[in-house]
Image (cartoon, rainbow, N blue to C red; front, top):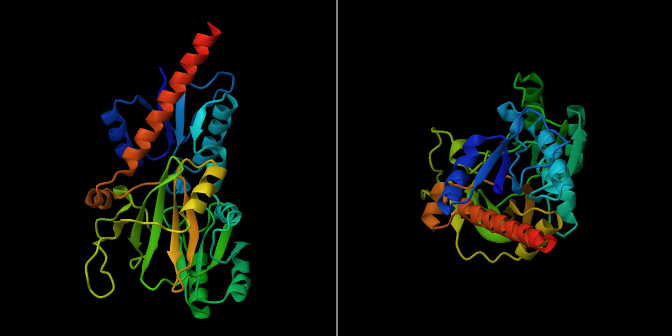
Length: 327
C-alpha cells in the first residue's frame, strides 16, 4: 500500500506528526534508522518519503544514523521515489559550513565564521575575529556545545573545560569547530522562520536569556526551566509565534530552500542593532513548540501532514495515470 514513510531516529519527535496523519486518515509508516540492513537488490516500498534525520542523533546513541539515512536516500532516489528533504538537505543538516556557503550564494548574510580542525587552532581563529564570539560545533543540534566567549581569559577557561571534559559530546562529531563572531541583538532573542512546502509558514521568537539550547519540542525542555523573564521585568514565554511577519529576506530564504531541495525546514537568525538579520542555522528536522502554536492558533506538524498527504495523493494519481496509459 502506498504510504507516507517518515525517516527518523527519535520516536518522541514523531508523536505529534503521528496524530496529525491519523486525523487526516493518511497512511503512515516509519523508518527508524539506527542499525539494520539495507537490501540494495530490491526496490523501496511505494509511497512518498519524508526525511527527519537529525544532526544531534549521536547524542541519543544513534551515532551513524545520518550515514545510514544517506544510504537509504541514495536507494530511494535511485528508484525515483519522492523524497522530501533528500540528499542535499541531509548534507546541509549535518554541516554548518555547508549551510553558510549555500546561504552566501543567495546573498543571505551569515556571521563571520572560521572553521577549525583541532582545538589548538582555536586561539589563532579568535585573533582574526576578536571578541565577543561564539564557539560551537559544525555538527551538533539543539544548540549543544554552543559557548559565548567574551574575552581572552574566558576563552582560556572554555578551552580548559573542553580539554578536561569527560563528556563524549564535548567535541564536535565531525572534528570541526566553528569560531563565529557573536551577533549582539538589542534584546536576548533570536527568530526562527518556519517553512513547509518551501514556503514561509510563520516565525517564532525565542528567548535566549537562559542559553542556546533552543529545541522547541516539548521533549527537549527541562522541567526545571521556567518561562524566561524578558527585559524590563515582564514575564514572557520562551517561544512566541509572531504575527504579521513580512521579513525582507523571506523571498531569498525561499529561493535558497528551493535550490537546495529543502521542502520542510527552519532558518534561525539574529538581528543586530543596525537591523541586519544574520542567518546562522538551517534546520531540516524542524520541531515546533505546542504551547506557542496553541496561543497563535497554528500547527507546523499539521501543515507538514497536509503537505505530505497532498504529495502522496499526487504520487498515487501519477502512478494510476501511468498504469492506465500502459494498459
